[in-house]
Image (spheres, rainbow, N blue to C red):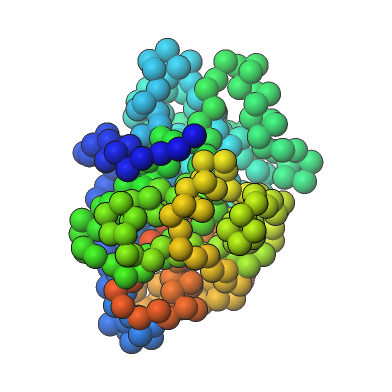
Length: 313
């Protein structure tokens, strides 16, 4: 299973007029702090508050009509859940979402608000993939996974395509990494358009499965890692995303939760950008590496769980 850049171009055509063209934000203070020219791609302003809408809408649009009418199922901690629920509502496709019972309330509420039927489970007792497979078989639903799917990856790759169209060449591109859908799609785009651009994936230090996998060239799993970046608590990269990360990503970085909070608070206070912890991974990585040059940073989402974050702060 592989993917070509032409699929990302096709996904961009599908999304035209349905997904937002998200803005690019700059900050002189951030440039001075990092020693780089920083260009922040604000996917926190995307529909449902994250880049996930791009992949979800692309995937549902490519389903055959009978599959769409029967409905789809996915498993997600929140952002893909919301995205699939809204995409399903727009395309007339019923959605069932398997979500952990400790998912942020804001994401549970939003998923239900977009029309998704939520099934909650306990992370410590149940595998979301096993539960999803059981429900899919019982209800005749097509599974649309959160990242390891060619249409999902193609949709997520449009983030970088749009960024390059807005700003031109970049020396570095910093991308948050959970299951690798965004990172693999954006790295494929970067290497197709600007081969010299260095693509850096960033994940939490306690959820470093992708970094371990990148270094060892063997798929590593980290189950239920403790991190405030709930969107990056996936146990491992997928088969497709692992392949693409190995082919197109130049390096992986990890940041601890304190570094992640610092980056998130900077975005809130100095840039007036509401970004959730997972969404700030790229900036935390940039501030840690300080590579110089023209640096793109993808802010992947803005669905912050305020009660939890206020307690942390």
